Every structure is written in structure tokens, then in C-alpha cells.
Length: 180
Image 1 (cartoon, rainbow, N blue to C red):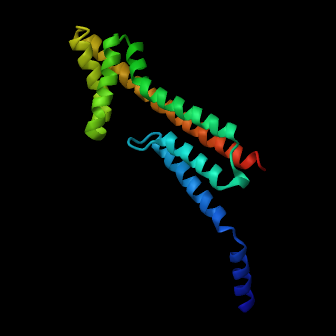
Image 2: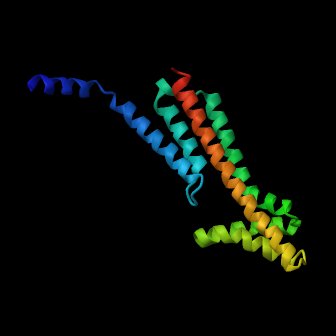
Image 3: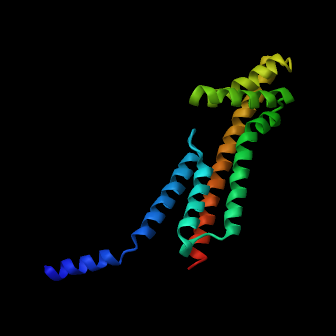
């Protein structure tokens, strides 16, 4: 029994606990970011970028290259641009006027102050209200462009999730396989 205990102690003392700590934080940030790419109030791609940067700064043995970090930053910016513009593009695609686009933007900004229901309903109400009030459209065309806003937002969500998966894949390609 004493020999087993000594073997366990030797094995535990040989572990690089700092490495496991860095990897634990990194993986936690990556998974939280992946979940946050579809959950409201959680800045998914930003958490993924933070995990990549944290790992690079804390673990030189498996750090990403600065080109890889730059590409992660570019993907982060693209994901937020798509997220911001997707509802407006969808509304325009379904026949919305420039007023519907402005309604989506204004409704999205105002909706932020009303928590989750406001963030979901704000762009929808904004697109419909602006189409009715400023574009002087009837209910059916205004509803069609509002539906476009919903479709655009949904497509934007799927694209943001895809970009988040690409960011995580890039991290592992850089941090694990490149160093291999």
C-alpha cells in the first residue's frame, strides 16, 4: 500500500497544474462563447476571442500566432456586423422600405433597455411601426417586411453560430495541431 501511495504522490507532483488551469479557463471561455452565440445577453464571439487571447498570453507552449489572433479579431468584428445588420437586410429583402430598416435599428436600440423581451420585440415592432407611420404602407406589406426582419435576424443568428464554431476550430488548429 505504501508503494502505491508513493507512486500517486510522485504522479501528482509531476503534473503541471498551471497548464491545466490555463486550459480549464480557456475551454470554459470557448464553451461559454459557443453558448453565448445563441443566448441573449452573453457576448459569445467576444468570449471566444477572450479565451484565445488569454490562452496565448498565459501558455506560450501552445499559444496562437499573432496572425491567428488577428484572424480571430476579424471574425469577431464580422460576427457583430452581421448580427447588427441581419434584421435590416432581411426586412429589405422582403420588400421593406428604408423606413423598415431604420425601424429595425431604432427598435433594436430601444429594445436593449427592456431586457430580453425588448431585444426580441424591439426590432419587430420598430420595423412594423416605421413602415406604417413613415412609409405609409398598409398592414399586409408592413407585416411582410416585418417578417423579413425576423427571418433576417434568424439567419444572422445561424451565421453568428457558424462564425463562433470557426473561431473555436481556428483556435484548436493554431494551439494544438500547429504546435503538434
